[in-house]
Amino acid sequence: MDERTDFDRAGFLPTYAGCYVCGQDHPRGLRIRFFADADGHVHAEFRPDNTQTGYEGIVHGGVISALMDELLGWPIVLQTGRMCYTVELTMRFLKPVPAGRNYRATASPGTARGRYWENEGDLRDEHDEVYARARGKYFLLSEDQTAAVVAKLTHQSGDLAVFANKAAPAG
Image (tube, one colour):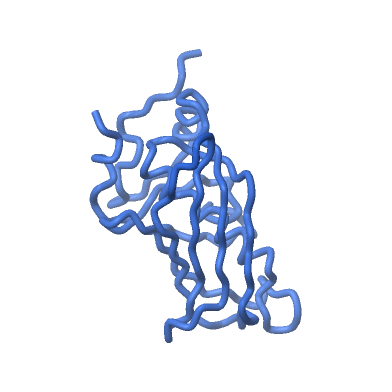
């Protein structure tokens, strides 16, 4: 059965409680929810506050990098049915990102490149102005490693049933 059929609908993706980016109960995290559309793109709404700044009023590049890192991996997960590790992340900051404004981060479907996958995305404001671009390379986890991660994901009511057919390894 083609894994992709599990992901052909739009909806929010599951989260992982301990994750700095998506963990909904992480005490210092971003608490981002990722949304997959039917075309294989993944999006995140982001409204940074002053606790996420470096220079006064400007969001720290590391915070933006963390957001983009997780965002770029999700389309690959949806395409392959396997979780992945980041091998390389390249950020290009086009302009400072002021805190207290609304942004949307978007990642495209990934591309297989032999042993790894590549992906790209960007961060835009409500006027479609691009503030940052990201490119990443990702290695897929094994089926057993994926199942171990999946066992720790949290699904909220209405989330896509991502990995509904995966079980934790026996053991």
